[in-house]
Image (cartoon, rainbow, N blue to C red; front, side, top):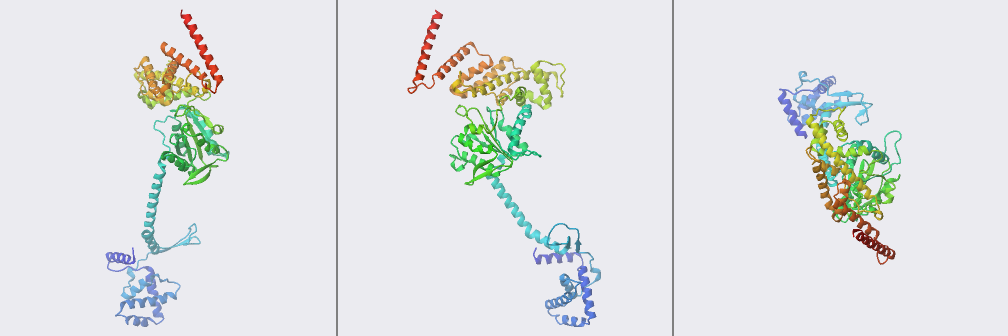
Length: 574
């Protein structure tokens, strides 16, 4: 408030409090000392006469009284000038009464203060309550609104920038259905932990200073690569910066957003460079790298070495980012096949430096936990088993053992289950075990087929998948009353739907599936043998042309051999 508001507030409080003005002890002491001094110096009559001469001009009279008191204070070491105006008012109005003096200290010396500040002298602070309140009022009036305006503006700009950078998208969000199974605990987390220790460092006396490395996950879709890495980022407190490989495509070879052919690719490159610019507490995750150009992937080779540097583009300017000693991890994930069905070839320079793992493969002696993970991840997808999982995971493993072995003696349950519930659980789990075995065969054949060179194939490549996603889709349709024939029909129907996406490879892949399930009909067995025979013939004749005479000779000999074989079959029939 301004000076007029202060005066008005003071007068209002004084008038509403009583019929007189209160007097401060400082003013009372100065009033008494001033009059005593005048009398001692025999100057009181002179003072009184000079003041009375200005009765017609009270303003000048008030100023004169202040000058008299000011002259007295200037020659005294005991009083200061702060009470001069109050004493002048008391003398002008002749309204001094000792009963109106309020003996309250407004000044205090506070000792034992720590720190350095202009108001402190030798650890002491001279508190003047009136001055302090005046400064506090000024601070509330002048500084607080400015600060509130500043914080509001800062928040607005931060929210605007946060929205433009899409920072909310980079927070790890672990799926509510994420299953922390034995495979993750016993296999994945230990091996991933070793790699991440090389990249972001470990705590303790043996902290690494040569941080390096790259984690490369190659597996079929549906094994939870992204979900698992998002979970790890959440547990480590890292920003999860996911770069979408399909959005980049094969045409992107540079990290510069300006070189992107479309806005989607440019946006992914901007995210990538933002992750580099953050420079700490970041997990950079490149997903579906089989869709990316090998030249683009090779840009990250330098991060695998101890130098830990990479060239990026930030706001149109080239920058070198040095991640030595920083909590920055780089993870790439991809599938064995590209979107066109071709085999995905990891750049050699990258593969030689990265730690590569296949989430869809059995690692070492962990076949049992790998098989168990299929059941663990599908529990919540089946309505019957979801009830069991909510009661006790320990009982889940007990009942799986019962379903596998048929052994019921000596088994204890943690939760209470009725006989009817136990029968339903066992019935569903037996069917789930059959589904798991089929899907495992499909998974292993997919991986085996992906590892074979085209030159050595004796049958078409197998592209059906046996992932957690397939297991979950089938698990949600399993009910206790389903019989074996219905179960087999369910599995076949599921893959009949998936095989349609393979177009010209659909028939070969479906017949291979029936072979894996060991339920081919005689007609299907004959057809499958014909397809393999034709494939082998075409594969052997591959490359025959006008510029390949030797290939023509081989093809001619093969046709001659087929003709002889046909004659032999006719003679055998006759």
